Length: 409
Image 1 (tube, rainbow, N blue to C red):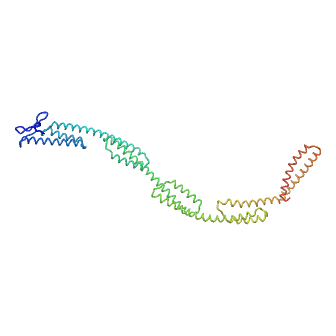
Image 2: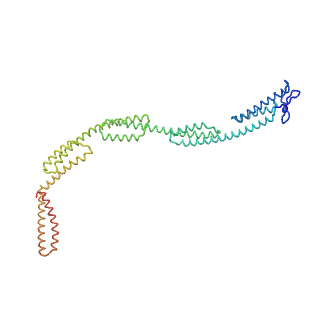
Image 3: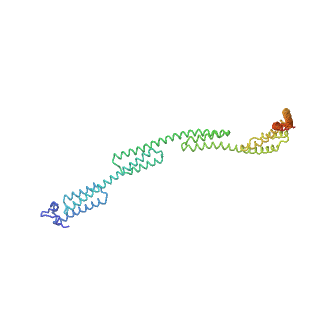
């Protein structure tokens, strides 16, 4: 840079710099030549140029705050205004003015960005509050609790808002979490109470089940165990540490009883199957008495078979009706034979049958004579009428004769 346009040194050693407002005194120089004086103050000017350039780059490329940038600009501007350098001070002021304008633009941009960020943060926190208030009514205790904890972490990662807005939203958020926590504690307290009640109920059921485990009153005890099982299911679950132990005791008592019953029933079933085999043999023996030819011998044989039958005992339930039905069929056949024999040998019944047959025979004979007389007299109408009456009397006579045959003639 040429020294002549921007500065000079007078004969007294005073150094001047030229500005738009005229010359300004830079300082005094007594240690050397005027050229050395100007060179010194020009180097100071170059130092300001470098300082301004560095500040321009910082403003452009770093996140230097507007406040710090403005302070740095004012510090350099103060040095320029003191004009203790030789150079184009007006050019430096223009650069500083432009830089100040850039800083202001950047300030406004950051302010706008901060406003957008604050608005986004506010909306994000409002969304968190809305979700938290919805979760406060949830009964999905585990999932809702985990989600609320995640919402807290999200909240912590968001920027703070203005104190009033941030405090109001946090109050709602915290209140929703507290409401959920209170409901959850109440729920689990009630659940604990229910489980304790279930434990006490199941303790009583276990005690009764264990007391019944040695019973041999199979039917009523098995029915009672079914009732106990229904009561067990209705009681609900006890605490986890008690439930498994109580169930093992309850189930173990049942197993003891039902195992003993199974062993007894297995022995009984084997005995009943053997009884069925023996009764089937007796039924075959009884059925050989049919048809009845000798009533007295058949009756005696059946009595012997029946006495052995009664001594045998029970057979399996699913076979009982079949085997007893075959035995009853033989018994009914003998009973029917006895009824027939009684009717045949009853004197009073025989006399009544014989008398009725004689009366009907006399009536038939009389009608036949009347029919013959009517036809001989040519009275066919009377003969036809008497013939119809004869048909009825003859049918009665045939029935009476058949009954009389049952009495042996």
